[in-house]
Image (tube, rainbow, N blue to C red; front, side, top):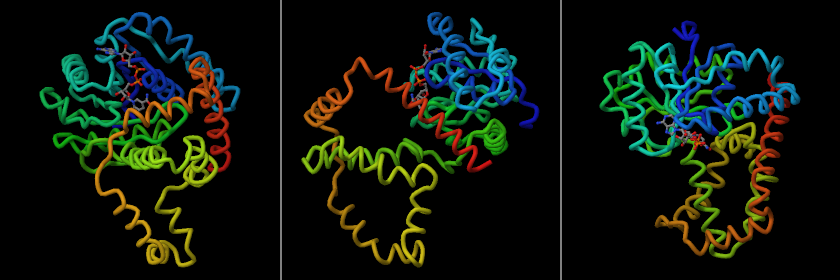
Length: 313
Ligand SMILES: NC(=O)c1ccc[n+]([C@@H]2O[C@H](COP(=O)([O-])OP(=O)(O)OC[C@H]3O[C@@H](n4cnc5c(N)ncnc54)[C@H](O)[C@@H]3O)[C@@H](O)[C@H]2O)c1
């Protein structure tokens, strides 16, 4: 079935939607890209060209013009969705907007097509229930920017057909992403729940004055994150005790239990802590330099992706 996917529609051409266009087009698929905002539609071709040229510079793409030629920006949702065998919805993260756009996609789609939502944390069942083709909808959650960070969370709603899960999974592998299956819906899925656990602890340590934001960041950038860029927490602990994971658990499970017990109640990120962390960040990086630093991040990710391609073949 995945082989039958030749045309992909992308609805919403912001940060994530435009990255998705690169993912599918570089894998040889035809892409129809639609955004409700004409300004975005006009701007997106130049953005795609720039991003692909940067990727070419990093050795990640061969022929920029051929990839670009496979992406067509269209003026209506129907022009994107009706000819597509797969639709990637990438509009704002709001239930009402996701509901409305899912119904519009539902009305325009081929009933055999599959619709993946880029939703970062809202489960599909919150916005696809009323769709006639609801068994063809699921969440296919990328990381930003999807053309540089390959993992994708596949999250079926209770009414998603099992063959739709298989199609989405196989399509993601085919286009070079790394799919992970979230077996049943949970807010935030896996990725943002893990990120949330780390962020919540980082905020608490910062607010209680244990360390600066910069030193907490260094702990990840020059410590935990080095291993995490190529292995997860379970493999990390498996290698961090002579006898493997079980040995690690015997030595350190009580420590982690005491840490968990030390935070028995959930703590909201306080306005005071946000203001203090923001002040520290704006000294380290003035607001006017944020865009340039994002470009620096993306160039770094490209070099890392090229390095990983060499390591992993
Ligand atoms: N930015 C991230 O880090 C990230 C990562 C993973 C997933 N996501 C998810 O991807 C989705 C898109 O996020 P983003 O960061 O690209 O946002 P964005 O604001 O950059 O882009 C959203 C786009 O959707 C368009 N849009 C809104 N309503 C529309 C409609 N009715 N029809 C067509 N287009 C419409 C907007 O004009 C805008 O260009 C969200 O669900 C978000 O949670 C974001």
